[in-house]
Length: 88
Image (cartoon, rainbow, N blue to C red; front, side, top):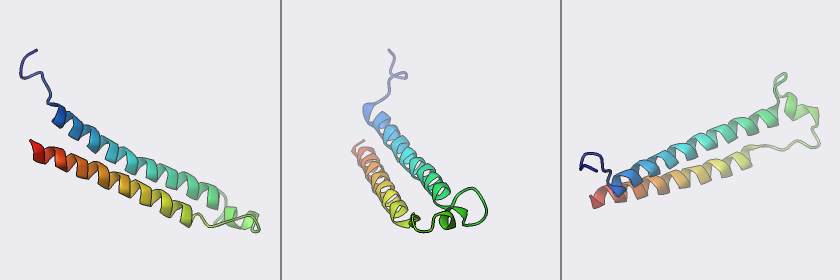
């Protein structure tokens, strides 16, 4: 193996952490879309919210939890990536 073909572990780890940060954001966006579609339905405006009004609940608390967790994960991944970059 030549020097040009080798990849330093810290550089590879930084790329993996950036990929994980991107995947956590994409995962949160996909879950947001699915939850909003289920809550409000694909029909007429507010169809899902008025169809079974006694059983319907707002999706906002769940979305806040998912987005908050994704934000924390993204911050952790990016801070880890920055620490790896400073070590080099």
